[in-house]
Structures are given as C-alpha cells and as structure tokens.
Length: 148
Ligand code: GDP
Ligand code: MG
Image 1: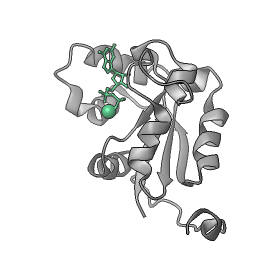
Image 2: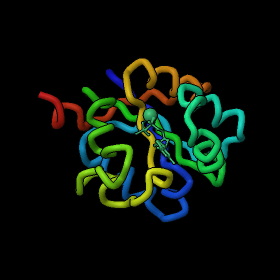
Image 3: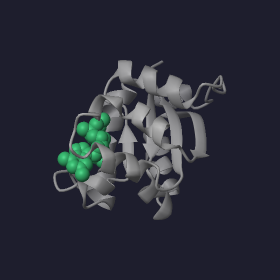
Image 4: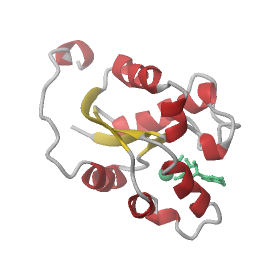
C-alpha cells in the first residue's frame, strides 16, 4: 500500500503538537509504520530539502529544521500522499484552510509545523533517507473496518 513521509518540524515538537498531529492521521484511518524523535544535522537537512537549494529561503529553512528535534514518521494507506497533504494544508498558513494542521496551528510560512511528501516518488526517497533501517512490518486489525 502507498506510504508517505511526514515530519513534525521543531516548532511542532516545541509547541506540544505531536499528539494532536499523530491523532489526526490515526483517526483518519492511516497506519503508522515508522516513528522516531530525531535531531538532524545541517548536511542531512540540506539533503532532505535538496530540491529547494536554489531558493532564497533555503538557509533559513535548513536553520529551522536543525533548530531542535523533529518527529519523523511513515504513514500508510490508500492515497496517503495526496490525502496527507490535504490534512496538512497549504504551504503558507495564511492560505491553509481551517481544519488543516497548518490552518489550525500555524501563522508564518517559515514556522508551518509539519512536512509531508509531495508525491509517491518523493515519499519513496524521503522514507529511504530518514528510515535507512528496515521499518517495522505490522498489519492493523482494523483493516476491514476502514476499507471496503
Ligand atoms: P511544502 O511541501 O508545503 O512543505 O512546501 P515546499 O516544499 O515548497 O517548501 C518547503 C518548506 O520551505 C515549507 O514547508 C516552508 O517551511 C518553507 N518555505 C517554502 N516557501 C517559503 C517562503 O517563501 N519563505 C520561507 N521563509 N519559507 C518557505
Ligand atoms: Mg515540499
């Protein structure tokens, strides 16, 4: 089944939003397949955001991501990449709809609480980068209650 990489950024951890955010993905019906609290260094953060290295905000973005621990997760389910981005909301919290994570908990684009992969291909790359260890393989007993 499809997987996505979700990261609660340092502001989300510092602000005590970890449980709230995990709860939203859990209650939707997605399965948690990887989870760790981790501090990353500059070169790792630059690798994660390599596609944005030419952007004027790149250095600030890297400083932000290395400013404290983050919660790295793998979530699994049908269309989880696209639906995960909808749960997260628009990049700029000024434009994120209420009810989305960024819409409910963020104000500035440079403190937008959470990351989610933008495609199945980038999810695959990001999961490989953040979870080089073999992720735990388990199946939820809720499956027939969530999927037709
Ligand atoms: P995302 O996929 O919605 O996270 O957005 P992007 O991949 O385009 O950008 C990655 C992250 O860089 C965003 O989540 C923001 O934290 C940050 N970012 C994007 N655009 C800007 C910007 O114009 N200014 C600043 N300061 N940060 C930005
Ligand atoms: Mg992105």
